[in-house]
Length: 317
Image (cartoon, rainbow, N blue to C red; front, top):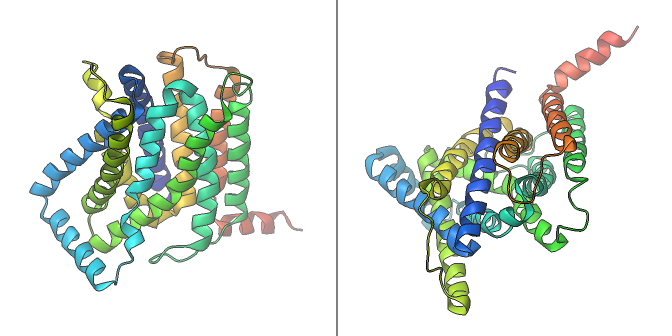
């Protein structure tokens, strides 16, 4: 438990960052009237910061050399370094859908996918960790987490929310555990979270620029940009939770990371909808109750299998 408790606190922090970034990128996309440009701004600003960090980080530059050499010799499979493609999908979805759906609906669609994706990735395993045992506590915690998500969203899908728009954040959430796992692998191999995060942003920014170029050729670019500096902070926030996720994924597994992240997302999403609600979206009692249930689910999922066996043994006559 000494590993899991700090790890889950870190996962809560990741979720807080994701929910905050979702609100910022969603509002930036709404202000610009262009989710593609908002996504490029978010990822691109993060990439610029990471280039500056690499310039002063010998460990980060050495890590890039390790990854580059591994790719050239084919000791490292190419798919380990394309986790940023998932980040690009997620940020693009934030810019397109978060402002329309509201942060609560957007978040629960993402976390529904995260829970399912976390179970699959942990069961299959990665190069350095191998498959992780899916304990009864983790299954129970995942099921309870899904029930909490359904409760939160149950009153908000009636009539006003297009299903296709909800599927975008769900697909992004489904892929996030894989992204966290491969980022964790890159961090382990390179011995640098800066290297893993830089590659994530490099791939993501490249894909987003290409998508934005096609979009701009069809509809043009925004002519006015918001003056609020907070709306340009999404990239810096992304650096924080992507780096932290790359550190935590090999330690606690992507399922527990996903569940902790989900709780953090819903807590902060609830606070944001309470303090600064998006237009047309009101905080309901089901959101409050569902968010509380996610914390119970997280606690259940972190119980070690040995503790569950000991508990069952103590109940036997």
